[in-house]
Length: 290
Image 1 (cartoon, rainbow, N blue to C red):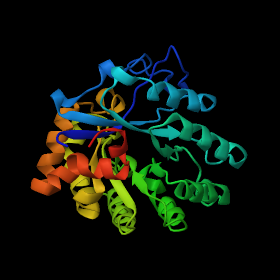
Image 2: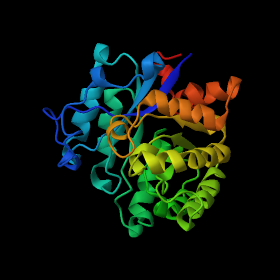
Image 3: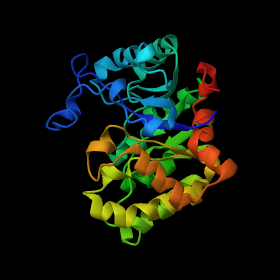
């Protein structure tokens, strides 16, 4: 395969499903469909859909809708679906239903809004163990202060394949040289020591308040994350449309260029970063994206 796998793309149809978190975000609170995707001037040859925060009662509807997009989204390689990992009474049936949809290879339960107590909840731990047993990966979406709690949690389930979304949402405005930035860097290094963890170089634009702090500080976070995980455990993601329209904004082409410049990856390392890691992690070869 050539080109770039967009390892973190969202689409939604607000006329079909409910997305409570979009309330008040006029630039996003509208149908944003495959035809609108940022394909980085033709560089994107495959994409991973990541659940987009619809109402929890509609999670199966979202996965079914995306799986059925067909010709509307020919680059779709795999689906990371939503599941409530804190509801053990319904989880297995939910996963069974997702298994019947096809293309679902991973799960994301948003942890970024959860309290510290959730990370030590035995229900969450058992749910993560169930994902591992079923061969599903886990997208960990946390903010940088939550990284120590995530590391402790994952220490109890070393058999689970985990990808850290958006570099763990570092303090882009503050910068890596601040106390918060140094704490993030230490946590990322510690997380990367776990061999079944991977990182998405994505989402930093949305974590910045604007282009000034983004341009001044983003490179250092990319550099550290890539150095910690290496090319075989790093993947590129657009975080479209969130990182296109919020914070510093910017196109996926610009983000790809920035990551390529900062990492200086060439040859086989560039191939891993651009597509190899994502396809291997999400096992997307099974849906025709060889």
